[in-house]
Image (cartoon, rainbow, N blue to C red; front, side):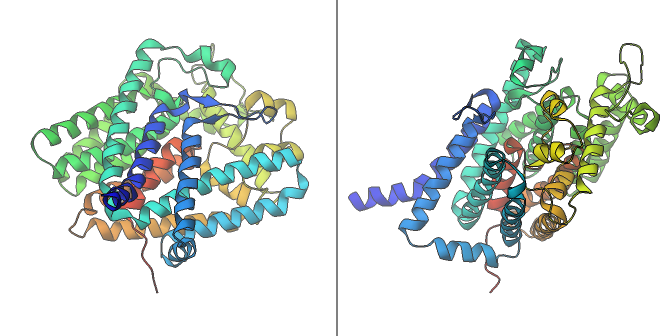
Length: 441
């Protein structure tokens, strides 16, 4: 009996970790703590759960004396080795630049690198046990998606004006769906993932299960609209019709028509796209940023112009070290050190990255880091493309993830979504159970 209980515990603990991770994902930014004073940063409950989970996995690998074999299997896998290569280079790039910053600044930058490394580490472990964890990851992702969409509508109803959270560092979103992410521009791509996944499942399931996925898909679509996020809407336009194309081509074309047609309806989302062309008018920009008054200028786009301004600052910073970068997540400090912005402006605007994930990676890890990361995503897309055409349990998730990953990268070019934890974690775990680790030897 003891052996049976021990064996059952051995089988269940990875599932418990999956449940804990997706459960803390639902809590989002709503639960945050500040463990150390003076560092100016707080951690979410997801950070804590990811840290504990990684220690549990590390302890298991050490106890079973399989850590070396595990890392070798990651290194020899044609997909996941590129993520390990990127993390190693990011550490090297930060180390090279460390002498230029204060110890406190290096610690903060290293902590963010550790956070991403933990997510990849857990993804590798999940990929090494993809067969046994495929169902738990799928079911808990669906449960988290239902909860987050539900919380989104609830928060919008109770707190339509988010201005009261400005003192805590959040933007004053007005009437936008943001759920416990507290950011509609980053919750939107998550909804695109939910829509792509649930639509694919709706095509291959039957009866009440299909109805449930259809309801989740439609709820996600309404939620996506209510984020009023241009980049998120574009992500949905790219991913959702493409997923449907495999099953119903006419339905896919209808989805494209609805996505595009919505932009021509005089609504808040459509008006945000209408003002976008004004962002290309260079005469509106001063050295400090976009110069307009939305009270008198109908074409004034303060949020979009702020994004363009950060992109310009990121490009200026890139020129200082295009090969090795300024050090992973040392972006804000480097902006001040290189006199791109003043320290006062940095504190006022909380600039810790440009509004483009790929530009951030290039600036902080150099062209080497960007190339390694793009190699990882290229291999991910290559493997997913092959899997989506092969009969089996991974075919439909591969189809949804393939097109969402393209949309994810496109959205990340327009905002800082690529390594945003609450979006990156579910994508990485779903990818891990779809693209298991395999040795190339």
